Image: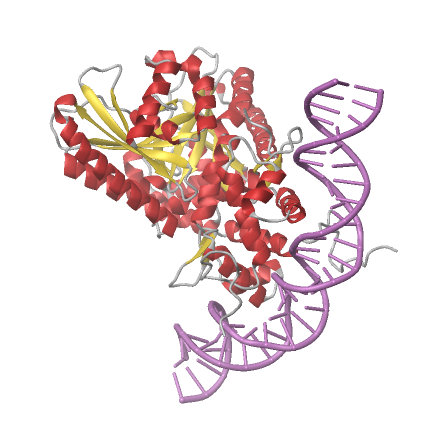
Length: 269
Length: 269
DNA sequence: TCCGTTTTGTCCAGATACCGGACAGACCCC
DNA sequence: GGGGTCTGTCCGGTATCTGGACAAAACGGA
């Protein structure tokens, strides 16, 4: 006789003896998915379909251990220092540069243009890798390590546009003063991001450099949170509408591969 | 009547109804503390004082959820992709640059020299921030964003020297081919790191630039894993033995503050 | 300042999900 | 191919977790 099927959906991979750990991790994912504004106890209970007292008890434990932290004023829950530190410890095995290396090489070879890898860092984005294409006419070269407000580069714009509405607005707002030194302003950036949201990728003429177009594709983690982007840039004559279609497809496919690779926890090194 | 006191040690802050979550987090910390070489089931059971079957059941769940991953060949357990992603999500609230900013300003003002913040990234270290001191004679300026093999900068050397013996050796080994372009080699780096381990801070004459000395102090997370470093550099005439004592104390104190701040989960932004 | 509403925090008896002793299976080395 | 070491699984008893019910705090409108 089949075991009493839980009324839940397809929970085929049922494990036994781990209910509360599963629930705790479910909570962590839920908190992570709303980490910008934080989560209230009641919302967490609703979203996870758990009872309030259960959620509360678990959160108290998770907070005690530093996995989450509760803002003492608003009572909202956020990911805590231990989550951050576990991430730092895990990072060497999930080195984004190394993971993306083959994909970037493939794209650079297939297109002949220059590819950039950009990682989000708070209100900014940092260029963490670059692969030069073979095409002889090079566009401006963004140096590895350059840190600029979110939305300034095209990869950066793709990340910004992919953030949840509230976070998105608040970042543009916070960064507004710093934008003008990059030839941008809040409203312009906002409309560019809206366009990127519609297209599914970021596209723009580099504002400071006429005759250059670039294309950015966001990378998301399993919870859908954007954390990095691939971008490609070339002189406009190599970026006609038709080719943009091809390039965006190429970028999207490679991005999916990378996302899947991180999710599957491939071995690095 | 007092509740039957558990035979365990001083568990004053006892929470109830969260035994298995506490145990799961204990496991995660234990795995994190040995993430380089991975942990065997039996070792985890021993180190956590839990029963093997219990550990196994929990690990199966944690692996299922992606918090840990098991190497299919060696059966060893490592932190998994979800740990990495939670870290990425938590990162904006624990932005190292922002956290360190005030400390770096203080040090730069107190000393007049230039301060660097270096973060580990896999086999490399990246300079993620720099504060110029007021002293008119500047030393070479390491650019923000520069990525070099672990051990090449002085902050970087401090991180390397603080790693567990096995990881330490294996990194020097892996990086050996890349070291010579920075005027270094494996044996030299090894002896420099040994010296740093004895002193508790890294100290060296910049190999490529005579007349400059620099000092590096590692930053560790709560589990003791090194992940970044503060360093300071100046012309040798400003780095006599006596002043080195003062500077190293200053750096150490500020580092402790930063470590504590991250541990306490201070609010950023 | 008061009272109704909303949300967070706590208690405890009941039941069920977890624990862990015991066993089976995989692997390795000699 | 036998002895040792390690990983993986089973299942009964019970310690642990659950969640209904209640208390306390926060909020906000009048």
